[in-house]
Each structure stands twice: as structure tokens, then as C-alpha cells.
Image 1 (cartoon, rainbow, N blue to C red):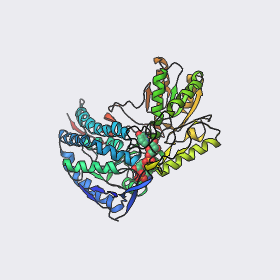
Image 2: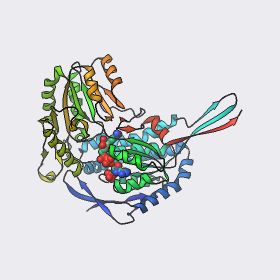
Image 3: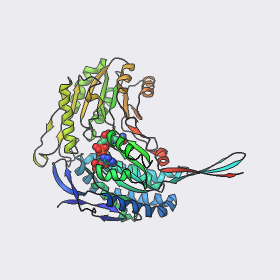
Image 4: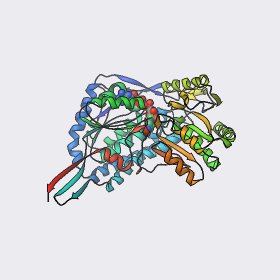
Length: 481
Ligand code: NDP
């Protein structure tokens, strides 16, 4: 039976006004398993009105009361972890173990974290001078929009919604049309725990239509977006007329910089993960691997050997470490870049082909983990975001050269540095243009820290206090002394 994903407006599931739906595919099989509402202006209008109506009451609650709702949502996600992990794996093609160990636990943590962290957020302060007393308060903005991508659906959806709600905003959120299932399960949870109607509205549909309408809507005060840089730029332009606050988390071309004096075994294990987790479809994945010349040949062999033992297969299987690409469009895009490598004088050391599995997954969108060397850093493969299981190798002779190559892209999201020298890692980290730099580790997150990219990778910061500031407006009330 087909899974039907409807909108969630004013606390109820609703068919799209025009009764039109888009197909939802299971990427591991390449077949349609559901339909998702293809919303139009009427649906966006209703969702905004519902969020507007809910705002006075929600923003008027005590913070602890809102935190109580967030904690209930977290507890219910936890209770339904198994089913949510299955849905996420089916929708994205990611291994079930990854969904169970990373995506769903992080969605729980997002709600719990903001419920607790906001206790220490200073909403009001006084500034006195000889002539005045100023009361400075931070207030919710009103109705805000959250737009998230398909690679970490529930993880990134909740990373936006939780901070928006805790400070008193009401939300209109749009998941990617490619992976809408867990957002719809979250709506069920919100309904079951009694979140007041209209506080969270979820509208599905294409980015070009539903997303565009949401961005252009004058009643929406801010947009928190995660996705590609081109889309982010379009949102920037489209929100211009209504002067919205914007938080844009966008693409990356992240370098892993490996020095001869690194802890080799730990580096090797983590760089394989940082390159190929979620089939390389994480904005923070390493895509350009820069290796000190003295260990370049050894690294090449060891890296390829280690990748060869990754278990590729049906995402449903507990033993699978590497699943399918999430959409046919992305599958074709990755193959296009692999073909392009040949024109750019790249030498494919490992992988480079689509995989045809047997049985249930024979028509799925699988691509081998691919390693390419010999490309100039100015080549398209080293400059453009591929967002798949494709990494390039380059060697460097000095620290200066490594920094130069690392910074020579339009992006600046994250970087990893591998060395046992603190002085060296400190120097390199300070000179890398990236919002997040990991030294001898990857994807280690403390949710209190600011998260976001430099250059074309981002505008603004998520996480901790940064995101609570983003979702609030400051007001000064001044009286004479
Ligand atoms: P897209 O930019 O295509 O889409 C992201 C979201 O924006 C989707 O919900 C999409 O809807 C929506 N959208 C598309 N067009 C518009 C529009 N004109 N107006 C409003 N919304 C729109 O990104 P992907 O989903 O393909 O995700 C991959 C990208 O996300 C990569 O570039 C990756 O680096 C980036 N990313 C960045 C992260 C970060 O933290 N910096 C984290 C994770 C991913 P729909 O899909 O329904 O069309």
C-alpha cells in the first residue's frame, strides 16, 4: 500500500488544496512507495494563518512550559526510535544502523538540548547610566520558516525547529520533497503529545513552489535554511523584499589535511568515515584529501585497502555500512562528475562505477566509493560540490602549501587536520577559512558551539546561543533615571 504524506496544518493532517501529490521513491530499490502533498499557495496561506493565530498563546507561555513540550516530543521520538529509523533508512537509502545510531538519537538530543540550554539564555538585562535605565529584552520573532535538505532529514529538521520553538516562535517547516516521511511522523508525535494547534505546521511540496512561496511570504519573519549554495542564494534574493532574517547553511568542499606526523591508524579509520559516511552525502564530509608528500604513496594504498572492506548493500540489513544514493537526480549527478574526472586527467584509483546489487535492490541507486588522484585543485572536481562518495587525493610539500590548497575554493564549511604537533595544528587551524575545524577527529559536536560556514558555505551560525539570538529580536526600553 502506498504511504501518503499529507500536510500538518493547525494541528491536523490535511490534503493539499489542489489534491496533487509527488512520488516518493525508495532509493535502494528505485521504486515509488508513496505520495507526498504538492502544496500550493492556498496551503502555505493556511499554514501561515494557523501559525499566526497560535503565536500569542505560545509566545506567552513561560519558557519552562515550552521546554516541557520539547521534552515530551524528545521522549516520544525515543519511544518510536525503531520505526523512525526504519522510515529514515527507507526514505534516504542510508544504512539502518546509521539512522538508528546517528539520525534519530540526534533528533532526540536536539529537542532535549534546547529545552535545557535555554534555561541559561539571558532574555532580559538592564543597562544603567547616570541618565537612563535601559531594559533590554529578547523576544520571539513571530512566524518563522524552516527549510531542510534530504541528507539528514529528521536530524536537520529538528535542529531548526527546536530552537525556533523554545524561544516562543511558531513555525512553518518544509522538509525536502525527496525525504518527507520522518517529518510527517514528527507531526504525529506533536499531535499525540498535545502540542497546541498551529505551533508547528509542516507543509510539503517542491522547493521551487512551496519553498519559494514560504520564502516570499511577508508574514514569515525569518528563514532558517540548510541546502545547496545556489538555493541559498535564491532564497537570499527572494527574501529581499520582505527583509527577513536569514540563516543559510550551505554546501562545502571540505579538506582533510594529513601530515606525516599524525597518529596514522586513527587518522586512516576516521578519514574513511569522514569521506564515505552516508555515502558521502553529509555537508561535512571530507571531499578533498590533502596528504603530505612523504606519506602520499603509503596513504593511497592503505586508504584504498580500507575502503575496499566497507560492506555495501541493502540499507535494511544490519551489517550494511554503505547504502544507496538518495535520489536518481543525485545518482546521475555523481556519475557525471566521475565521467568528468577522466576529461580532467584524473586517475580513478578505486571505484568509479554504479553498482547493481542482486534481489530487492537490483534497481537501486548505488555507486562505489570512489577515490581519484591527479586532478589540479582548480579542476571542477576539486572546486564543485559533488555531495556523494567521491574523494580526490592531492599531495603537498609544506604547511603553507596545504593551507593554500585548502583555502582555494569558494566554500568554507569545515576542515580536518591530522597531526600530533599542537603547534602545527594550531597554526593551520587558525589559517583555514572554515566555520568548523576538527583536529584529529571528525563530526564531534558540542551543541553549545556555533555551527556554520564561511564564504559560500554559509551566512550566520546555528547552535547554542547563536541560534537563539537568530530566532529572537532585541528590544530596548529606556527610562530616565
Ligand atoms: P537543495 O538546496 O536542493 O534543497 C534544500 C531545501 O530547499 C529542500 O527542502 C528544497 O526543497 C528547498 N528548496 C529548493 N529550492 C527552493 C527555493 N527556490 N526556495 C525555497 N526552498 C527551496 O539542497 P539538497 O536538498 O539537494 O541538499 C544538499 C545540499 O545541502 C548540499 O549542497 C549540502 O552541502 C547542503 N547541506 C548543508 C549543510 C550545512 O549545514 N551547511 C548540511 C546538510 C546539507 P525540495 O527538495 O523539496 O525541492
